[in-house]
Image (cartoon, rainbow, N blue to C red; front, top):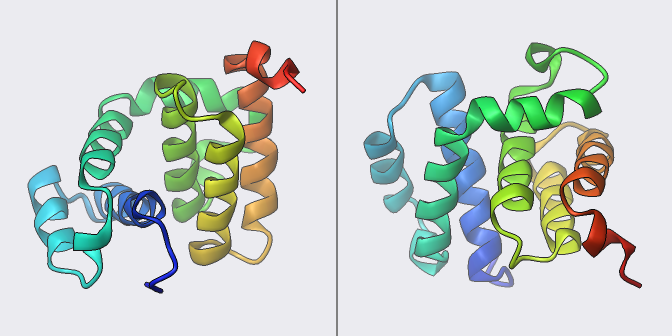
Length: 144
């Protein structure tokens, strides 16, 4: 990871990797945490954000999938695994962390999709989270 990234951006990158390990590899939280801590740059990530969001996304996965489903044009299983992880993280932040502006959450998700996702994955992630933000944060979205 490059040195120009904020601690929060680094944390989100590790969260996406952790969610991927959980969803695709079936790893538990302890194994994910141990692996992340062994990666160069983890010490520069926002550890509190990492721990909180990884746990919340995992604990609320079914509710988050229900929130996301109306905005996805295919079945959950047809969405690429990495995009599913980014969408779960974005939905978790939109729903549970109103202290973080929705634009920041969506921009971070787009950057994650550009880094880890497929060629046009960022466009898909942007479209889905934009629609979800309109539902979860209508007042905030109406502000100029």
